[in-house]
Amino acid sequence: MGNTTKRYTDEFKRQIVELKRSGRSTSELMKEYGLTKTSINVWTNQHSNSGSFREADNVTEAEKELRTLRKENKHLKMENDILKQAALILGRKDV
Image (cartoon, rainbow, N blue to C red; front, side):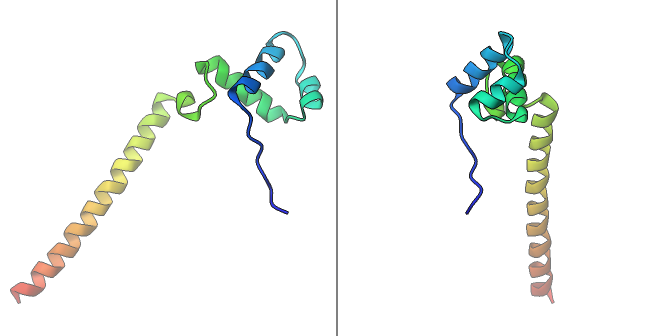
């Protein structure tokens, strides 16, 4: 049997965060709702940082810049490979 990932709505996550902030312990929430400690902590941190549970909203500026630079690097490598191939083709025609 495959390992399935549970998906929770933003409203459910918001309710768990509010329960945590109102004084309920993480262990109580884990037992009552069948959640992991990691899920509760991640949701609480995400909501504290940006008020959102979307990954894109919880990315630091450094992470955004790194993604942009990686994308640009990949594009430049592809362009470089194309130019190398063109140089080889043009070199053969001259001979």
